[in-house]
Image (cartoon, rainbow, N blue to C red; front, top):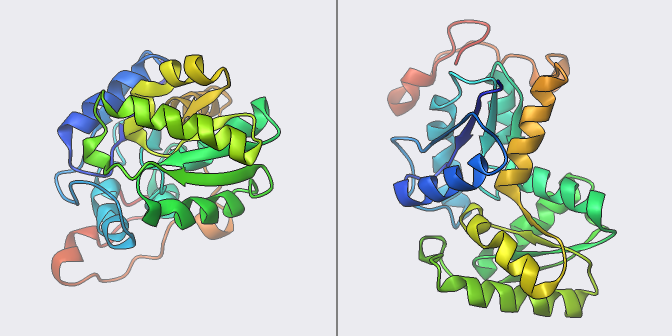
Length: 239
């Protein structure tokens, strides 16, 4: 049985429990964790940068890994050092959306994260399919049951405005709303956590992991100083 570790890059245990519950709906052997270090939520480039060291400390003990934040923080670094495949939430959600629709809209949390989602859509080759990114203006840690109504309203409006055919939820904390929003808007709604876990599990079954040729080869060992001294790479497969 494939063991997938789902890493919530922020330190919110409540959100980690929500993420783990969503992941276990589609996979049997899941461990959901959050690092001991890092921001309480990720809502800026600063937050994202400081979340990466914590993510890297969790890349052990599983067959595959999921980074459960829509910014995919540290995805490239994680692929360099993890022994198994690493799947990012945004990449998984967007690629899955293109398998069930010709176009999609992203519903995210705060307006300041809209451009980040657009940048990722371009990076993942989904810029043409991504018709728009729409913010609910709900902070990540305020995504409770009452927020579902507003997320659904924004999703429904996005379909009309963008003339899109599916919705990608732009935050791991929105996963609990997936089925209800899909029922309300009568369109596919993709939760990145479930998409990423399913893809990670499939990669293991296919016997595939990150290529060690070129960019994702192991980083060259070198000294690290100060607070990052513990991240110094001392072996070919460091973490």
